[in-house]
Image: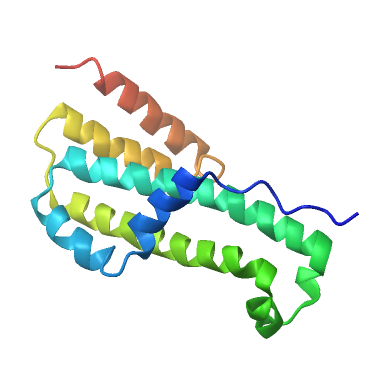
Length: 157
């Protein structure tokens, strides 16, 4: 009995993510003017959406790669053979989406660097993004200090 492919992403997730990342003109050119006139909160929300989409796609990518390793000898194939394999089309599409989402998040980060926080909430948005970017495994104390500073800041008016 041939093993089945991993459970597919929901149609809604695929459509929303594809529209956000693969639409011609999306990403840098489309997001540029929006970022230039957006608030810290709006840019932070864009960053979080891209981050969540990246996380979901990374899980799917991992599932697909595991299936390919187990069922078609993925690790033993050359790069050209991997690119030509029909079962890997979704994996390659996800790679492209992940690259676009990473570029989108970086664009948001640059925009946030240039945009001063005008309120406590703006500052919280920026600090929460830094906390997400800081790997707790590599910087446990710094991450914990930042997390407690964020919590300390929340009740302040």
